[in-house]
Image 1 (cartoon, rainbow, N blue to C red):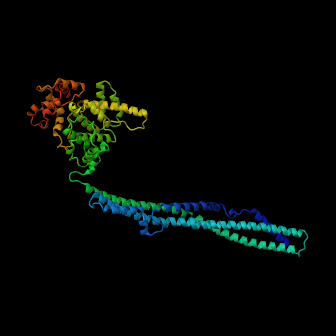
Image 2 (tube, one colour; image 1 turned 90 degrees about the horizontal axis):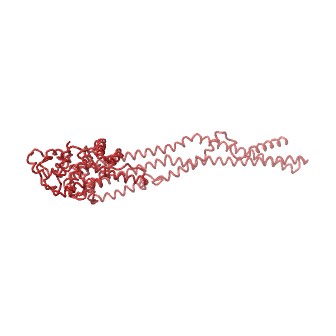
Image 3 (tube, helix red, strand yellow; image 1 turned 45 degrees about the horizontal axis):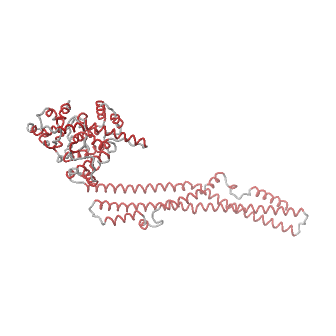
Length: 575
């Protein structure tokens, strides 16, 4: 009997020595081992996401709807707006807009509060249970099992040692009835009973731990749904917010546009002028000539043609800003600005400069530069004609309109000191500039050279305006500015059509020879209308049916223009 007990204890000791490690791996299969390895990362992920998501909440966590809304920054913004619009006129545009904006901020705050409450209930609380209760309970069972296995292995080692000691005492010849042998046998029996009890606890804890692992494995998909549900809640929140904003914006814009409508003209079509492309501006207004170009030309024709330093002297910033605003809101009321030609010229330069693409286009920039480098006048003129024909139709019509006006302005160079060269210097960089590129010093040097060439191109366009752009120009092309300077407008309209009868007129009083010499040295373009104006009084009496000649400027308007120099070019222009 004793021998069988000793054999059994040796077997248990050997088994204990084989499973000495306190880990639970000896009880788990390959699948459960992989599940066990995911426990700790899952717990950390749930804890970290819950902590960071909790920090994203703007309201008071756990509070009811009313308390949460009061703590939101959007509600504080709505309250500030409510206090502010009380001080404004309730019928004013700003007061109405602020009142409606206050209401939508209040609505957005409530949508946000509902979103946060749903987020807490459906995402934050489940993540908290997962990271603070469910997974820690599984990990606690794991640690308990590890401790039991470790205690069991220790007890089995003690039992094995006690069995060896009992065998040694029998080998020394001690009698079976001796006190030492009895004590050793009792100790072995006690250890055996403890080992059996501990083994039962290990088996029980192992079963619980395996059940936890199986439970976790089956619920991993539901845990993943927490994050999917988070995105669904966010999407619903943003959809509701966007819907509220779209509804409020549509109503606000409708009310605002109705409040801003004037009886004579709505500001909306004219607000998009400066800084928008030429094609977009013309299409929106249904025009052929840009409104700022026509308006400024008509105002300058009214009172600015003899202003010295036109386009060269800067205007007051406040006047220029007010002129641009009036042009955008009510172009019928521009008469007050006619007395400030420098502000009008500044508005025209500002429009040309703020175009996204220059009037002479980026695509033809290199070709314009190549034409400017031609030395032979005939070849240069032919190149300019070809380039003008390649311009888009809207660019060509506006460039023709502008060049005809600048040539008309150059006729007054004796008074305004603006020769074609001077005009090209101040306006050329606003009509053509290179496309933007990453600049270095070489690029800047090239830009300086191209600026000189641009001036040469624009000067040639002004000097050859009649050749490059034949035909009459009606400066009041839209009929919108009939109250502004009809004399100058009609005078220029007849510049081309009245050439044949003016070519061989009765002699006119000849001006001083010095004026002719000065005109020759300043390279005046072969287009001035001064001889025609000086002869206009005796001719207007005959063709009474010609409306243009009935409104032509009287002869004293430009007394210093030398007709002898200009009669020959005038005769050759129609051909």
